[in-house]
Image 1 (cartoon, helix red, strand yellow):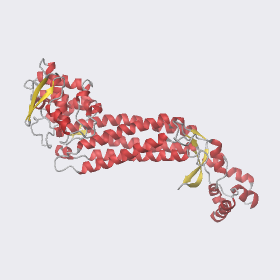
Image 2: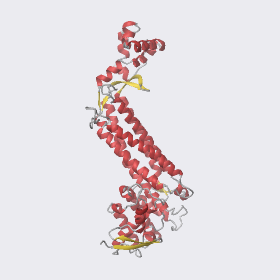
Image 3: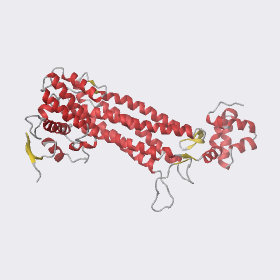
Image 4: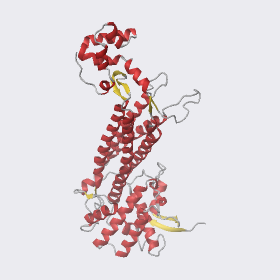
Length: 469
């Protein structure tokens, strides 16, 4: 049988398998919170951030004389091992849990304590030499350690997400350049409007993505203000004088981002407004991406009875009964991912609203919602780039013929013939099936062929000029 060690907390004792680096409080969390089945080991940036927090706290505590240098050295060693990802499998707490993240914090405290104990030549669980609470958690509370680590992890995860998102902007911009001379019909309310190019349409997608990238970068900056040193509710209880400032400086240096200490630690301990703003901005991005995917599905619809202006890469057979059918499966899966992200915005909103008084205990579900949203949407965007956008082709002749057979092109005649005459031409064309050209030039002789060629030249349709009689 596997050897065990006996650990205790104020609720009692438990036998912990000796190979585990986590201890009794983490063990209880595993028993209590089988909610998502997703442990924090699936979020390595969160674990890394917890390691940064514990190392910075140990260094600050050493400077303040709260713990001796030998203990601080052991904690720093254990934290470095955690930061390096060598003990990710020991972080087993469910991402959604009660207790405002206490189980996550204690998971980090216990793992780092036991790594540190072995570093000092002791056995796991010999906490009289290095204690998870007394030493690793010294001058801290879950209420400052957890949100500080969460903000760091979220900041780093957003860095990666924004890079992926920028790739989508580039992909659309390239298609905009590739399709810059492909004439097509623009549409409003799914009805023919006026001509444009397919390149202009795709360039607009790139522009709208670029706008959201900037909004995300702006929102990301809100994460740089942390409450490390606030301890329980922001009064800095059990923290030595000067500890918060020292700790945050060490933390900024370790992580390599410009973290700052909140000027009001009581406000910072309860406030989750930054998460609401970031998630709202992420929802905005998801809405835009989903709208674009809807467009791609419409533009590629058919192929014989739809728009058929573009071709999406064929990825798999589309039906178990209809031979030859190919579905727009990549835009569809991205749509569904966007729906998830949009829903998680409401989760974050309600969780932020649900915090009472000096602490928001719902932060774990905020973390879950934001981590998964960034992961899933990042995967979806990369899939959209690689398996769809890069392989889109245009049906150039079909697009051109639809423009020239459209009644919508009568709009270009307004400055010359006036609205009433142009509307009359449109009405006859719609009723008879004749082209605008046939009615205006050949039958009614309202304009010359030379004038028609000027108005409907490719250059003028792409970059319209005001043309009069």
